[in-house]
Image 1 (cartoon, rainbow, N blue to C red):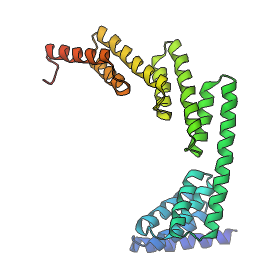
Image 2 (image 1 turned 90 degrees about the horizontal axis):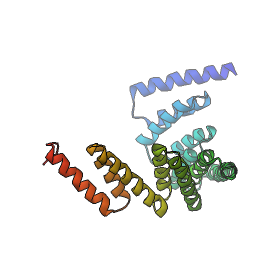
Image 3 (image 1 turned 90 degrees about the vertical axis):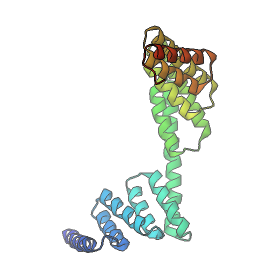
Image 4 (image 1 turned 30 degrees about the vertical axis):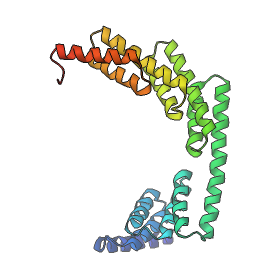
Amino acid sequence: MNEDRNELLDLLEKISNSITKNQNSAFDYNMRGVVYFKLNKPEEAIQDFTKAIKIAPSVPDFYFNCGDVYLSLEDYIMAQNYYEKGLRLKPDDEEAKYALADIIMRTKNEAMNYYNIGFEYYQNNDLENAIINLEKSLELNPSDLILKNNLAGICFNCGINAFNDNNFNKTKIYWEKGYDFNPNDEQIVNNLAGLYGNLGITNFNNGEVNEAIDNFKKSLNYKKSDVAIKYLATCYEVMQQDGKGDG
């Protein structure tokens, strides 16, 4: 075993010397990446495979090699990405097709596991941990629209809980997260617009004109409101009267 490692280290030194002389050799970067991978140095391997791809983006094996490293790290999303890119260049590569099929199956299973864990938390009314696990499921299966809508609903409920506790910063975080999952959710849109509008009114009444303007603008980004528009105009008038406006 030590002899094999010593041979790899000798080879690594030779390839590195070659790269020093010619830093545009995709072949050398790829070969050094292979050696790094065998030496259990995945980060260095990925860096070299990425450099090889940048120099020669039409070589499928560079993508497959990078996919192999990510697969070993159980980063299925990145592994799938590189295998798919390689297969576009070499669609008949059986090993890559098998690896990709295996990744897709693993990803589905892992996504389902996170979904089940998240749903169990949800049933136990542990909404925060439900969101954490359901987000992990969504990362592995980003096209799941039903899951996105469910996450938006859970985030909305978390925001309601925070609102009832007068924790408005946490409310904003949850509702904005819910908006990211489903920007067409009317209850999230309406509540975000209302929340920022009310914060703007509070700022205005406290003489915090700049903060009020920021919050009224955010409110209007979610939904048009005559009240927010009038307050915003009044804020600008106050700033001009105080000599703080831009004219």
